Image (cartoon, rainbow, N blue to C red; front, side):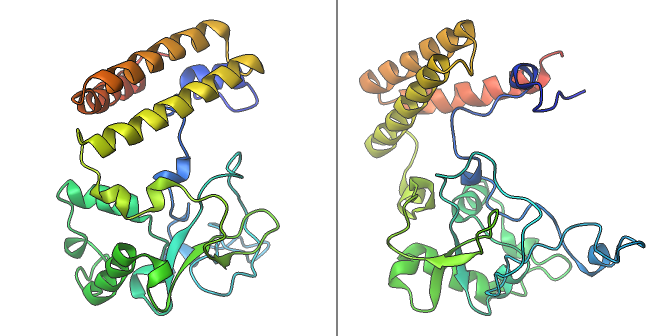
Length: 250
């Protein structure tokens, strides 16, 4: 049984994120899947949908969310919005995650939209063109953030305070083992190391676990400083460790 967050020590032993990252760098879509069948399921006493309808997929951002991100006050919550784009009519799209899937030979036109693959090819190309050129330089294409807590969803511009590298098309040009990639990963690891030190200082992580994590991070930082192949080795190691974590006995 997965321990709940009211027992943080046990929860942290059971669940490990892949480093200190912004969860939204991968999970940028709405948390619930919607279609006419799902939305037809309602509570007979209240008449409200069983699966909360989250209206972050259009420009009328007035509805209150039944959820919001915990601990993500400084995360980059932006996704692209284009008025009338059919791909964005059902869900938001995290472009860095989309490109990761596509680099792994996933073809969206073979599967999306469900039951009618390839129908929105032109809309998809419009989305990719905006990502490539950036919303800042593309007419009728904007960055939006979803509703959160008491704040409505809204368009954000250049003054958005929480920009992260994963939300830049430049991040898709980075290839494993390149000098740019190594510098980027080294910065990420140094940031992780600083967060582990802070966690140890404020007591939110056990000293033994903190020492283990610091040693591991320092090892990879040193490797990336001295060996350009270290970037690829790091990704391979992380993939193996994540597999071990998921298979470890409770």
